[in-house]
Length: 223
Image 1 (cartoon, rainbow, N blue to C red):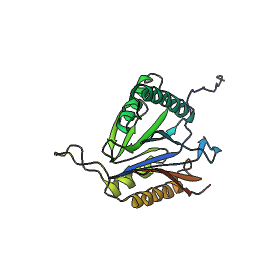
Image 2: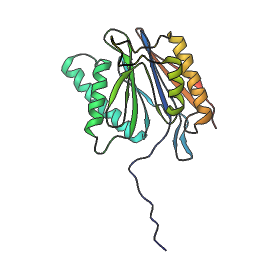
Image 3: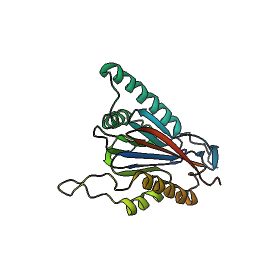
Image 4: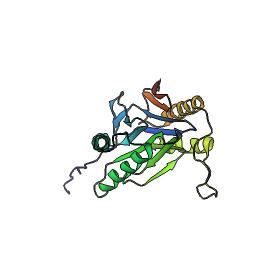
């Protein structure tokens, strides 16, 4: 009989789902608060959303230890930027910094799947979506995490962006009002929670607009 040995892995997947939607003058970033490993729930109240700058908010799923390490690096880099330039980083600049930070670790990646949302220099909503090694794209909406395979087709159906191949280039922002976008996000998570065991407990929604940042919460099913 061959000896069986447990393989140790430096990574885990703690599940959870993130969604971001950009509008004409707002951005909505949302994530659930469940953190799991395998069939165990580690906590029902863990925020996956962090504010990186005045107009930049990041939501991350994947391995939460790597996410925390990534957040610390970005906070340190942003502090250096503030000391050197005497201003906050813009959302597109933060998007490039996040890409560079992930790509720098491409041979031993942060197992983190991020969406970055905020407002650009014109005050328009922007969403950037990432893979684990820093490839990114500016889009009108995005979803990452364990429930993204359920939510992305629904968002495609409701908010289909114009093809980036069309000329002249069309704007990627969604035509919805802020309150409609919030309702859409709530619908997304309510339906994803029904099918995905790693998404649930509570929904945290961050709304970023010209008047600042505010949070909303909605209870999700807890089984």
